[in-house]
Image (cartoon, rainbow, N blue to C red):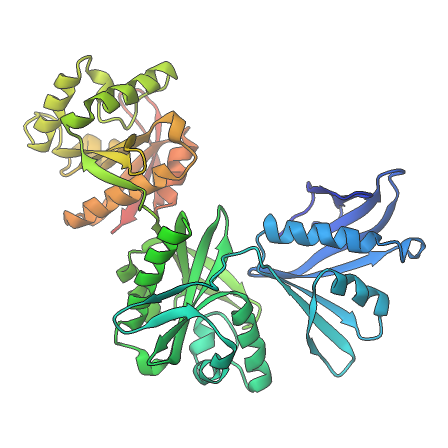
Amino acid sequence: MIKLTNVILETDRLLLKGSKEDLHTFELVLKYNSDVIGSISLINEQDAACEISYSLSQDYWNKGMMSEAMHRVIQYCFEELRLEYLICIQAKDHLQAKRVIEKNGFSILEENNQGMQTYILYNDTLLDFKDFYIETSRLAIHSLEAKDYDDFYEIIQIPGILENAGHKHVENHKEGRRVFNYYMHMMTLGLYSAGKLVGEVKFKQKPKHSYEIGCILHPLSWGKGLMAEAINAIVEECFSKYQIPYLTAAIFDYNTQSLRMIPKCGFRYLRKDRYFSYEQNQELTETHFIRYNTKDVYLIEAEDSYRYQIENYKKEFIENHEDMEGCASLDKFNEIDDWFNWIRALKEGKVEGWVQSVTYLLIRRSDEKMIGIGELRLSSLPNVENYYGYIGYSIRKSQRNQGYGSMLLSMLLDEAKQKGMKDILITALQDNPASQKVIINNGGIFDCTVEDPFDQSKINRYYIHL
């Protein structure tokens, strides 16, 4: 939900202050005397868009005040809130109000019988797919084109297609054109078989320059693996070309085909949410999935060739006076050779009272720098099952807050899945919110908090199902 209470924007002549009385409104305040002369509100928020409305004291008409303020709010909506588009509704004969929005790039979307005109402005700062073109064994994939409308309408007029994407069913070409124009202006890729549009994959901007994908496919193409083929190819291209840190997908629980398909494309369960669809006017349950971009990093079992980097890794923790939790007992050994002997013995299951485990290093490809350590425990003892879990990991301080923790855990979970592990217990200290966030970002479901009998620390337990 958009809340503007603590937001302050600035133009040459104005301060735009979030109202304390109305969470969705900016007050327009003159800089030179602090008078409030108008307001701009962001209302009817839905998904990645909202409606914008405004008012201005008549004493300040025809001075460019509202156009100046509107320009700054639009910039905030598109660059900070990352909305996909804005709607503005004005009376056809309200010429001054219409001039303000037309100066700021809005164009007419539709007009009703009561003389009310709906204007729209799309966010052009998002992904640019104009030059996107890839081919798979059966598909060509590129941005939608105006000539695709007939094929597009053929798909969306089929009952259930748009409903699976959270939209209402279209009844006629007027509604079909509205939906098509929306998809044309948004970050949408068409899927073409023998020159005919058979589906699309749409991107929705999310926080931290990530995106959520959604898709539709003609029923005649169902059951052939076409959508999985398309998504795998698109994801690979987006991770390589656009450096997107991760992609998510949100699927309604009644869309069983997509729920089966998306894990086949490398997406992992994240969480369930309740979502209100304004178009369908009902609350729905959707399941979220995530796939991280790990192209710039790789996992490798700890080996002697990384001796110098491992010693530097340990040194960084010591210099920053940090506890070395998640470092595969690296802090317990003064000599690196002793540590290597230790992890080899653990891998072979030859350390009495300790579970068999494999130690990995997270390495960045671009400079071969060691970023983190991960430990995958392959068997169980009471201390593992109750307090420490099956995966431990750490990221060096100089490389934190860049998503590497989430990437490392995601890759360790892939290793666990390859080894036949199913339900993974992962724990984090209760006073370590960063580690808890990494677990939750990989689909961790909170179980309970327990007390470590050895040092009485509080430990949060999470489960991830593979």
